[in-house]
Length: 467
Image 1 (cartoon, one colour):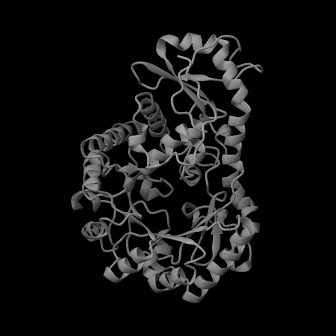
Image 2: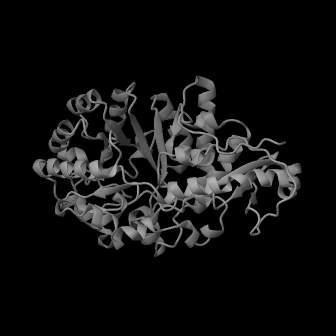
Image 3: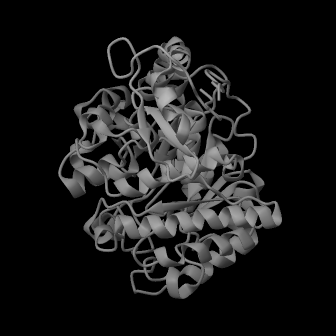
C-alpha cells in the first residue's frame, strides 16, 4: 500500500459514522499541511490547511477512499495477523564478556550460564530446517541471527553451524565486536554474513559510560577499530542504544557513523525491560528533541555528500506510512513480530517469542529439542505477545498513529508498566517520529531517509491528488 503524496478535496459521505470512514486530523507541525489518518487501516492523507474543511465534507475524496477502504483494511489485517515465522534469534550461549548497564539478559546467566555444544547447535539448526520446510514456500531461505549475550564466546560452534547449513539459512551475527579478530572477520565477510555491532558513542568518554567489561573497563576503542576494518563491507550495521548518557551527543554520533561510511545504523531508545535500563532512561520530551536533531543531521550529510546514513528504526516508521507492507522491522506494529514473524531460542533450547523475554519464565513456550516449536507458537506464553493489540491499550486505542508505532515493546510494558495492555516507555518519541515522517513526505524528502530501492516491490493501492 503506497500512500506517497495524497492531497485531497471532496463532497458527500459523512465521516465517523457507519456509512463513512473514520479520519482523524492531526497537526504534523508543518506550515502548510495537516494530516488525515484512518487509525484502523493506516490510510493517511496530507491536506493543505485551508482545504481541510473541504476534505472533511466533500464527497469525491471520501468516496474514493471508501472504495479502497476494504482493500486497505485487508492489507493491514494480513500484515498484523497473517504472517508466519521466517526468522530465529538464536542465543548459542548465555554468557557475555560485557556487563552493559541496560542488558535485558539476567546477570546470573551472563556470568555463569551455559554454552550450547557444537553437536547440539548442529542438531538445533537441523530441527529448524525441517520446521521451515513445512511452513515456508519452497525456495524460501529463513534467517538465523546469532544473538546475545555474546555469540562469539561460542565462536567455534557458531562458525561450524554456519558452514554446515550455508545453503539452508541466511545468517547474521549480532555481536559486541570485542572478539572479532582478523580470523573471525575473514570468516564472516568471505561468506557475506550480516554483522551487527554495538557502539553507544562517537568517543570513548561517551561510549564507555554504558558498555563495559565485568571489571568496569570500556571497550569502545576495540569496536571502533573493528568498524574501521569493516569499511566497504556492505552487509553490516551498528546499533547505538540511546540513553540519558548519550542522547545529547546523537548529532555527533551521526557525524561519526557517516564518516566511517557505515551503511545503516539504529538509534534505539533503550529497552526498559530491566531495572538497570530504567535507571538511565531519558525523559521522552528531552529525547525527542535530540533524536529529531540527529535525523535532521542525516539529511544535511546526504545533501552535502550524496551518501545516505539510513537510521533503520526511524526508516521503518517512515516506510510504515508510505508503504506499510514494505517495512523490514516488526517492533513498530501490534502485535509485534515476537512469536509471529520470528521467535527466539535460548542456549538450552527453550523457545521465547523474542530475545527480550529470555529470562522471563512466564514467556517460555517449550523446548526446541523436545519438538515443541508448534506447541510454543500456540502456547499461552506466546499468546500473551501475539495477542497484544494497540486497540486494547490506553491511550493507544484512541491514537491516530497507533499502526505507525505499535506501542512497543511488550516485554518493556510487562516489566516496566505492569502488564501487556500497557504502553511502552517512549510514547511521545514515537508520536514525534510519526509527525516528523509526515513532514518529510509533505516536503518530498522521504527518499533521503530510506534505503535504496525501498519501493521496488511496492504497488499503489490508492493515490488521490485532487488538490
